[in-house]
Length: 263
Image: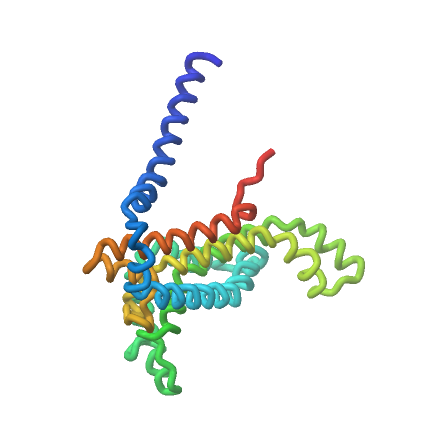
């Protein structure tokens, strides 16, 4: 290796080490500050079980809702040519970069009591703000684009010659979907679901703005961490470690699906 190549390699290695430190130092500090002896009592006293249960239920429901609308939407964006497709894709992906509190304000403007759709929904007895259903809606709004993005890439990468061959052999459209397309996009689907669920699980800004932080009703684990931080930093650390453990379990459980292929 030449001197120039060696210098470049060292520079890249140094920057990579800096990136690792940027990711790991806050997590190491969090673990180091955790009061492990008092952890069980802190978790119990802070209402973590209720907040965690609500987080898991609402984030899972948000993923299900995202799948219901995101899978066909991703298919349309990947396979159907129509005027304005690029604009539609930009609008669908906008919640990924939108400040979460702005997302919450938008949801209030749409589904609040005086919102665009809030009045008609209230007329039939449906109220979304400051409810668990509102929490799910807020999580789905900010998390669904991650699923759509992954699935769109998956659908676009499917070899259409395989679909044509299956149809030539007499397979129906549903059979082609079930035996050719879905198996081909399964890695993208699993990765999209994992990213969507992780984003929904960690959502804070849109949730607190649209659904509030009502303990036992709409207070998810991230909201409980923030509440506890105001009164008991040790309790906040305990809840943070709990959320960290859940997130780590998700990543480890799906590491094979999220891994970058090697040659």
